Length: 68
Image (cartoon, rainbow, N blue to C red; front, top):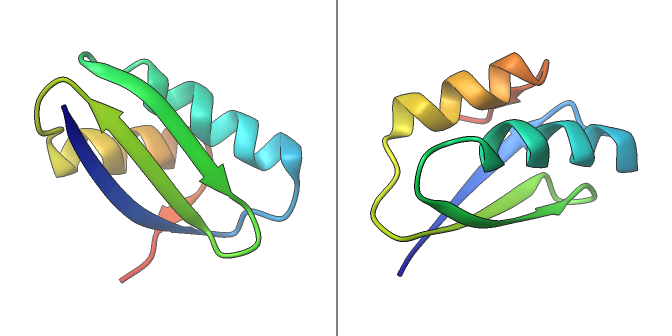
């Protein structure tokens, strides 16, 4: 089990969190996605390390951006 934490900018509500959670959940190997709208923190649990480019693409597909 691997845990990856990223920060997403632009989320303001539960719908935002659901969109990000849905897109990241579609990445192969992801088992759980926890989104904290207030801090922008997204914690991703997966069976193996998740490619950073895949996370970025999923976040952008949801309409948001990774911080930093």
